[in-house]
Image (tube, rainbow, N blue to C red; front, side, top):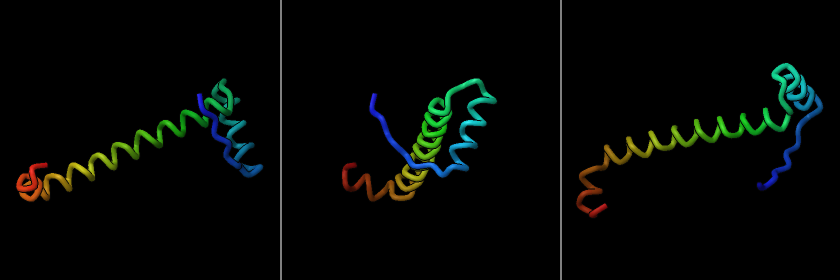
Length: 66
């Protein structure tokens, strides 16, 4: 597994630690879940935008053979 180091303010680190403690998890587990959720939302958002563009430009794409 790859590691990523991010900088958090003291307040952010404290908030993350409090959340993790309240959930019975580690701060790393909470941060990983947040990253995965964000990536999933962004992937969905970009996919929807690509679908709208493809639908809007379908005739051109068809002429181009795409």
